[in-house]
Length: 167
Image (cartoon, rainbow, N blue to C red; front, side):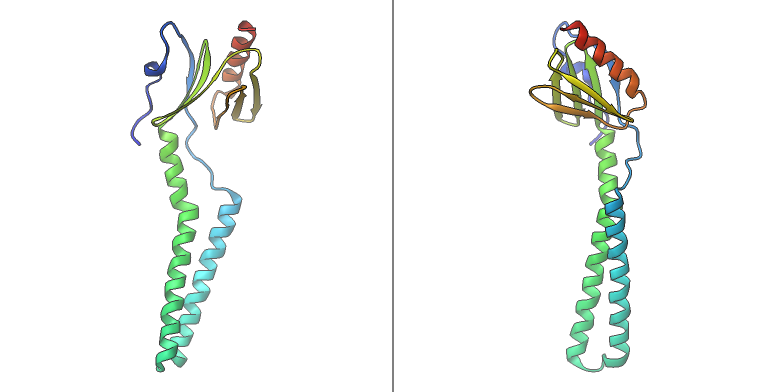
């Protein structure tokens, strides 16, 4: 994914762009992923120590050598899973965030994420809720989340004003 999508390319004729924003960089790793990643790394170390102990004391017999190989390969797989949960998913999420744009027009709220687009038409049936730096826009056809905004209050105020004007 390269660059931010162009909001002006998806505007209808006569539609006016009122606000545009992007998610703040620095998507955090969830506590659950951190704990599971740490458990996998610890498990890998324990498996490697067990494999080393078996190799030193029982490695001269062929059946134990196969067990050592299985322990080492299981430790490598656990290490891969731990890295995937903690570092690789975060890297992919940052790349996804780099290609995400939020927009508010005089007619709708938009989320453009790479080639994908989600929108909620603004009207009296639309509700707006804010939780810290995240703004939830819920309409009859879809629900959008503007995540990690620097100007969440400003975006909320613009949305509420547009919803009142369209009532």
